[in-house]
Image (cartoon, rainbow, N blue to C red; front, side, top):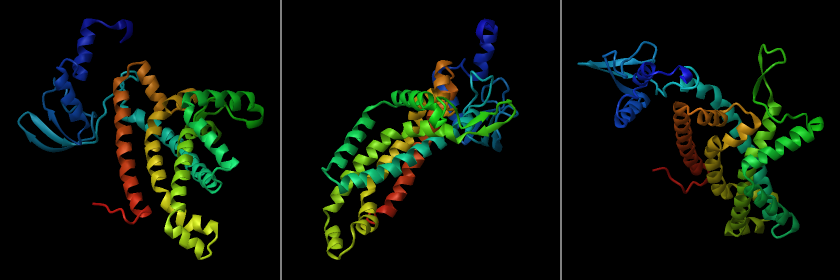
Length: 320
């Protein structure tokens, strides 16, 4: 409300958002907003009154002064964006973060598995030691520091050669400010930076897991049959060594949705992470709560998906 705040307007705003109620009641109101099946008062003075346009709801039952409806979860409205729904804010930013997280995890997965295999094949050789040093170095550097270094070095110092910018998002306005165009080159630096730490973890896990697999009896049998090292790795070793790698990748992918906060903010990537920082700076609590909830839901979904992958990787694992 800024400088226009007065006691009368403040009372109206508190009543609009239900802030005039006890904390316990406000919490129940929030759960009611989130629930697909919710209960609403027919009193227009009550916060839970089903205002036209507030939800896309289907009425189930009316009993006395209460109406039961089916609706989409309602994450309320942003405080800082003039009543814009949190769901709309998330719909605009989450896809960009998803693209960034997927790109980063693909980089980490592909390079991590390949370098992990090379490191295991050349155990204790100079190549193995070099990869281990680099992976340890990658795990030790915070993402925000890596982001600053990469943006400065590749986006500023080497800009003439890389043609990469220090900041930029997936969609940007053209020079005339008339239309949005996709800029894939802006994805390169933030995806690499976000993928450095999971890349280091995948390298270590793949190397150690593969070394354990190499000591199994069926690998010795495969070698005794005359199979080449490439065939052994491709048909037997890699699939059985992927279990811990899949676990790490799933955990990192979910955490990337939250960990992208620093990377997105530094590179100016218009995703969920940058939106969370802006919401924290403006105390936009509905956006913060909605972002945390959506990250938590995606974390659960990803873990369920990983459990299904386990069955494919290891037939001994059974779904109960």
